[in-house]
Amino acid sequence: MSGSRLMGIGTYRPARLVTNDDLAKRVATSDEWVRSRTGIATRRIADADETIVAMGSMAAEKALAAAGIDPTDLDMVLLATCTNPSQIPGSGPQIAHRLGAVHAGALDINAGCAGFSYALSVASDMVRVGSARHVLVVAAERLSDYTDWDDRTTCILLADGAGAAVVGPAPNQEIGPAVWGHDGGKAGAIRVPGYGDNLFRMEGQTVFRWAITLTPTVRRACELAGVEPAELAAVVPHQANLRIIDVLVSGIGATNAVVARDVVDSGNTSAASIPLAFSRILDGGQLRPGDPVLLFGFGAGLTYCGQVVRCP
Ligand code: UT7
Image 1 (cartoon, rainbow, N blue to C red):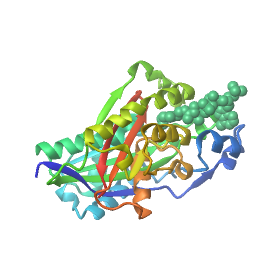
Image 2 (cartoon, rainbow, N blue to C red):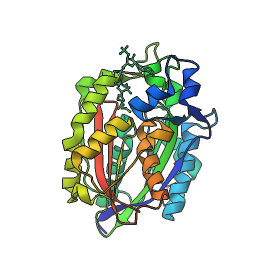
Image 3 (cartoon, helix red, strand yellow):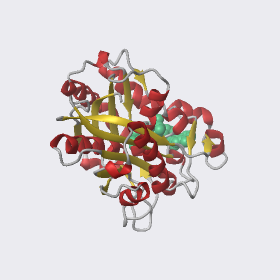
Image 4 (cartoon, rainbow, N blue to C red):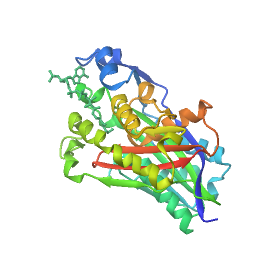
């Protein structure tokens, strides 16, 4: 076995649903504005007990069950998050502890909204070189902890949730090579400044204009995997804005793909958005095991990462 594959995916969506009309009671916005500029109709906001560790663990339990893997068989737990409640400690080891992953290493990865794809790439390479046999990738976010509920330019976007995937060995390579990169010169475009301002700030137009230049990079992920865009069964871009998703998908010519539109119901859940959106398409029954699916994350850093994977 020299390949790696996705063995199972699981998610956790907070129970509480917040509509655009709910937000319009506090800031000067409207359902029409938010839907037409972002595609978002509702988002899930976590309650106090739906922590990063709780949501991440529940998503992970489902992924492990889908993969048929016991937590004691995990060699590594990677948590992608940019909304950990504190600087120290990270939440990855707490998720590993809660799961009973007693033989696993555990760490956090912060690559903003690209975090799931980065962590998946690291997990895949660990399995391929043999430093781990089974790796759990968790992406869990509570953006609501960092939301300025009086800032209409960001509070309408941000949401909470978690997704997880188990990566294990395979005869063939089912997790394609990652394309990744950054524009660290634009780091200030998405930030939680700290030093007295612990809330999410974004230059939305800067990020929008940057994101839609990434089309050639998205196409490159297909080339590296040896898959034509027209052969893709599904495309799962980071769920930030339907307008960005449409530009990226039409730009690469993924003419036959199911396109993830989970942002409509779930808002922007940063690193968790890709596994949440991917899982939703899988649950819809439109994909078969082995179908090629393009994942592509982009956001804070600024940073991006994507790859073509085969459906579990
Ligand atoms: O997940 C990390 C990656 N993040 C992203 O990819 C986000 C990328 N950016 C975006 O999705 C969009 O830039 C936004 C959705 C954030 C904003 O949409 P936009 O079409 O770029 O709007 P804008 O910032 O150009 O604002 C247009 C107008 C402004 O008013 P004026 O200056 O023209 O009078 C804003 O003040 O819309 C106003 N506005 C709003 N109006 C009603 C901004 N937010 C709202 C609002 N409701 N919620």
